[in-house]
Image (tube, rainbow, N blue to C red; front, side):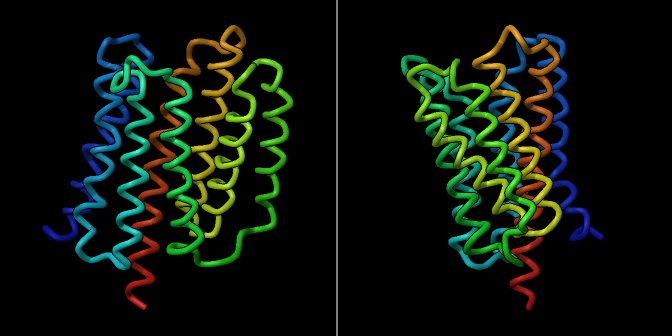
Amino acid sequence: MLRRAVPFLAWLPYVVLSITHVITLATGSTAAQPTKLTLMPLLALPVLIAAPRLRPRAAVTLILGALLFSWLGDGAGTLFPSAPTLPLMLLFFGIAHIAYIVLFTRFAGIGPVPRWTIIYLAWWVGMLIALGPHVGALIFGVALYGLVLAGTAATSARCGPLTTVGGAFFLASDTVLAFRLFLPEAMPAWTSPAVMLAYTFGQGLIIAGLLRTLRRKEAR
């Protein structure tokens, strides 16, 4: 019974803090940033608990690396106050997404990339058309980052339902965030907690899906 309870208990802090963080954003609480910085460390907890039973070790390292750089992206403005926040955030999250793409393509794939994922290329083109006139000198960085985002979502579809849905929610989070950053006057206040709701749900599903896939591949 205890062994069965451990995985649930390992996920519980992340679930509780994710809900708490979204509520702090919705209510304008000053606890929003501190709770945001706890999210990725708590999501690493089930990974660390499962790590001794997971192979290959490189996959575990990549998962933890993706969470580390996601955490740095979450805290770019707080952790590096003297640096330009947006470029730094794009850099950190870009590295996290590349780690996920390597995981999806090399270690956790259970099938080919589905044909329907062509919609993510259409998403990328649509985002450039919509945001291009508003991003200024960041256009090349934004275009490259968007391509990496589309790649993450597309390759996540190789790895089972949990990871596929997680990749889609991660992309949805970044989509809303992009409009909040570059077209803030068009975005209502409720979209701020919506970004983090999609982000925490997406990241959680990605990690859950990766752990499940790696365990199943190891059991074969």
